[in-house]
Length: 280
Image (cartoon, rainbow, N blue to C red; front, top):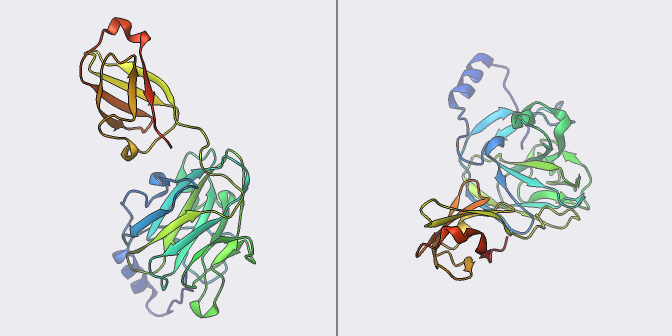
């Protein structure tokens, strides 16, 4: 984020023009309530960043700086800590001449996620440096937080790794200060915290439809619907009284629905089980 230099001339006109051109964010993932769930095993690629802005926000320790803080051209991400430790994160712009900023919150038990805009008590750390290129956290960074700055000042784009708390839920804002739609990659690594659910996917329960043509399976954890084989080959029925010929994900992602090639005796429902081969 660059320093915000305001002219003292025509303040009312400037305000009117700012409001006229402001555009609230409506794309999935661009508000705190629609944050994407992420884990520590994958690199998340955002190929396009819609230009928009929601609200101004607090950056504790930086409010005295002459900067304009807000979730400009944002995407939000949500994750849970499964092992306490330090968090390493890296944001790699597709265009290394772009300025990306970020801010992290602890939203454990927070019902209204819009509190990220006004509640300093849930703030964890941030980097709003106006310098370009890679940004994130590092074990060798000099400060916990970097405020908005002029690119010429070469303020570091890396902040110290925060320490995550076991069982706590976190919300990460990635803000694209440059007004272009070029994207970035987000990855986690280098720290000691674990943000990937170690629970192996398994079947928690199942229910057979009234016409005995489908089985609704509930898993013990959320899975990506697009990871499900459409032909149902992730699942099998034992003993093989029928063949599974299709599967679809059902929202929420705990549920999957299986279609069978032929009906079987509902009276024997308790004698059958659906086995799964998912990996998550």
